[in-house]
Image 1: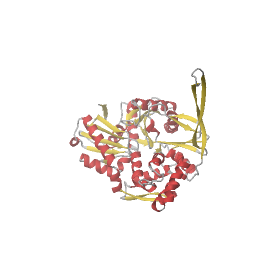
Image 2: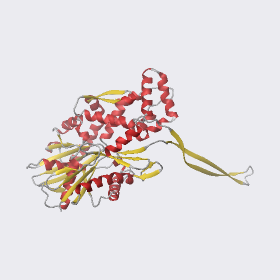
Image 3: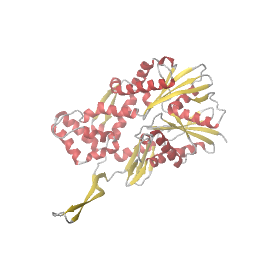
Image 4: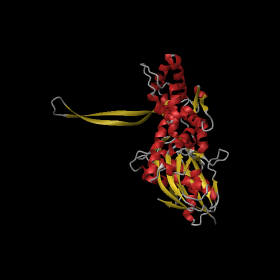
Length: 468
């Protein structure tokens, strides 16, 4: 019976699982709809019967069920508040009880066919006990994660069959979250969710360190080098520095920022799309775009804009005529078709296309939107991201006690690192052209190598790993 290493890159946007048998790296098919199926969107869809769909199927079902669906909000009684007050009579001798009861109602989308969950990894470090309402039932964060991880665990079991395996799961340097102990909280939630999904005795490894392992597995060379690995994905920006000799890897330090590619999509929305939905317009008659933006960017809440109070404000734009009317109509169509998710998907696709061309367009025919996005536009929008890069590079070099000139190689991975403006900025900052490495599979491959090494002392990659 063979023993293999399984690496699971459970990402904010996408998930990949790799296998290492001591010699070769391969990948497990996780997604049932795409042709190759090894890169699965980290998504879950629950319908009204609580049937679950994951990956591309989850997104497809959400779009099929909700695109251009007419949203009708109804009042639902949430609860009531009873207030007891004592009242003295005029002579202050007799106390009478006064009781007031106030019924609390809220607006719900009574015909909502299902709930889509994405980017759930970003909640791992939040304090409290995050719960999500699904047709009257409260699902803890761990329950949502367990459903996704159970699908992955079943795929791993089908692939490995009778073989024994060790499992290593990636983690960012810093988890996003509001808790003071967000790191331990996030790891405990992942451990609990993994155990409930049937994953046993798995370990964690920093994602940029895993990317370094897979890179060095495929780039064998002698001599001593200092290498900086830059992992820029959908949820976090993570860096590590390592010292490599012929038979040894020593990790010198790691640093990270808990925001990344998804934040870029929102920045593009604010800069290129929001002005076409009424942002920047100044009206004295009851329209303020800021009241709408959070609902539009948090696409699961967009349907709430169908309330009369918001539609009436949009109608003020339409009545104003001219360009305001055009923007108001576009905003109203976006709200009526519950199209924020689809719009953000189009923005992400346009961002990706700029990796191979100088100009593209953000197009959504349902709301008559067609706006150009150029590489120059993106460079201007990315100014805050460049500040983040400055900060985290400075931090990781201080931890590693190295200077920029002492770096021999810069290796970039993660979808957001493929943005030409990002690579250009890294090159100018560090004085070396970065190498792109397996942006969507490299971390999973390195995790698989690490998992195999946990079991076998006779690993064939020819390197010994030492943590600093």
